Length: 332
Ligand code: FBP
Image (tube, rainbow, N blue to C red):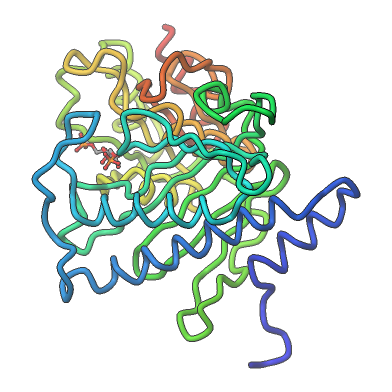
């Protein structure tokens, strides 16, 4: 390996943790667990057609959605790997109606983790990019009791870290521990995530517009007007439409290339489709840390306080100028 090889994910996180004299290493252990789980999921996603992991399990999850075999595999893999780290007290997953509460084994966990184990389920069987999204909170409940809902039902503004993995043309893990947002590409030959995108910044104005425009007929008139102002601007070049239908892939492109992703509320889903705690929240945290913006088309995602584990929300992600303009048009 040439001398100037990029830092590995764990080298990078360890170096950052050294800046905190009170750090115990628990966070690095957690990131190691998340990285291992996403490597295992990445391997299965890449070979899904060869194994037995395509198709549905025949079950429905708490959202009423048909559960894909890869959804189930990813969920089990993340739960097992995070439990084995010994630093987690509670887990909230898109696939589980109630949280997993972890006893002190051998010591109380200090973090609570929420995740969407495999986002983009409508694309899983067609080799289109999918991903895993996760958010990390500091434990709130006292350590002499078992962790639970109290540790998970926290505002995205209280996240201490968040990230996602995209399983696409390459597998990339994007992570923020509250300061910079960095991307790490999996080198399968080494089995290591290597630093490939350091200090990602979202352009204030971008060229891509992303939404499921088939829903436009059910959008609120002010949201439709705002969207069309970007689609057919009175002056200047229109944006280009890009929509994968996997939130993690659409968000990743928007984070790197700029522009806007919007999944508004509509008459079918008046509270929005996407989930606050393990989809909009972690992505909102990343966009804000990368100098972008994340709102529910009315207020910042980071200010929303969840009432339940599977709360839904409208979502608007993008550069600060584009998002501010969209919000302004919504208010007109
Ligand atoms: P899950 O796949 O994790 O359920 O996430 C929901 C999702 O698939 C997002 O990834 C995506 O942005 C959206 O739904 C697509 O919705 P639609 O099919 O209505 O465009």
